[in-house]
Amino acid sequence: MSGGRGARRVDRVPAITSERLELVSLSPTFMEALLAGDRPQATALAGHALPDGWPDRHDGAFLRLRARQLRDDPGAQEWLVRGLVLREDGRPMVGHAGFHGPPGVNAVARPDAVELGYTIFPPYRGRGYASEAVRALIGWARGERGIRRFVASVAPDNAPSLAIVRKLGFVETGRHWDEEDGEELELQLELGDEPA
Ligand SMILES: CC(C)(COP(=O)(O)OP(=O)(O)OC[C@H]1O[C@@H](n2cnc3c(N)ncnc32)[C@H](O)[C@@H]1OP(=O)(O)O)[C@@H](O)C(=O)NCCC(=O)NCCS
Image (tube, rainbow, N blue to C red):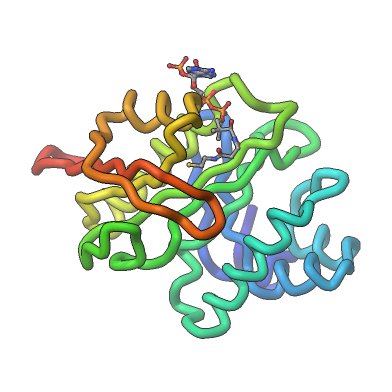
């Protein structure tokens, strides 16, 4: 979709595209409309379908946190949450993914690292969408921003999420207690000098 003047989307962060997905940056204006309950405006700004009932309480709190981050640092938008939109008719949104913030915002407090977060809505799980989105985010951060170190914090009983990051080469480096999510394993991936 065009991001030019007059286009429906008002943010200027380009989407990341993978084989089946478009990773569409959620702009502050979109999040404000959505959180205010203005779905027509949010849908018009998004340019893709919004799932019924989304955001639920959990995702509402998550989006409020990201909206606050964006108010404090508008330049952080390219790192933050993206809608995962299927590249097919109807453009359904199947989940969201992004980094917790720009480099330095991560559970292991490394200034050169970014931390991943991802959710696939239940009807769309088990089809490889989270793996594809995480690969696309890592490829973008490595190729466009020179990031080599990636972090994921995953609950020890979250087998699908552990499968995703382990498959990509993440290794466990520690664990911590998260006020909201309880115990989490810290996993890290360090890429070498190979081309992106
Ligand atoms: C975790 C989550 C994002 C996975 O989404 P998804 O699109 O279904 O994931 P994928 O299909 O890309 O991959 C899932 C992997 O887990 C594996 N898996 C699924 N259930 C599993 C289980 N019970 N035990 C072990 N592995 C399992 C799948 O086989 C697949 O691995 P494979 O590609 O090697 O076959 C999704 O379950 C979700 O949104 N959960 C709630 C939010 C969450 O936990 N986010 C992550 C926070 S760290």
